[in-house]
Length: 156
Image (cartoon, rainbow, N blue to C red; front, top):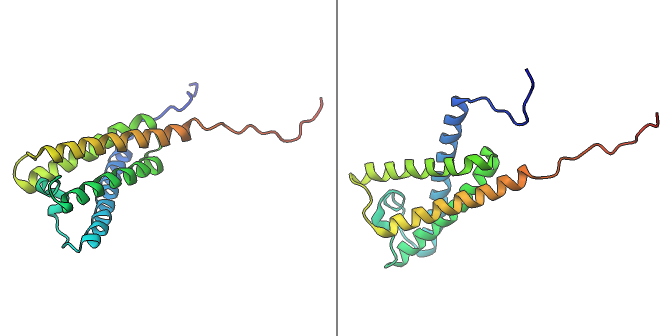
């Protein structure tokens, strides 16, 4: 059987492990970004900042800083896509999966779907940033020139 350029075998264990890894990256770095934001305004840390849709709002300084933490987290997660997923075609899939599971977590935490427009706007913007930047980084790596051996040649 002939080998194909970049042929991949469907590996569900690898995909599930990558999903779990991206969720860990998402929540770990979101927690770090929120801790940094909280230290700026001397605010107390809570799970509400991650899962409650009321925490994201344009009206308060804390809400705007939380939005900033979510946006910075999408940049950090784009780096996670670049380091661990490494396929431009899969960046959008993993981005939507991460944010879908975050929406499910928010739904469970609040006992209903998020109703604030600011929550939806921030998450859609974060999805777009994470997918586009992750794809850009992965495509840049995938399209890098393949080094050809330019060692000494023998004359035959």
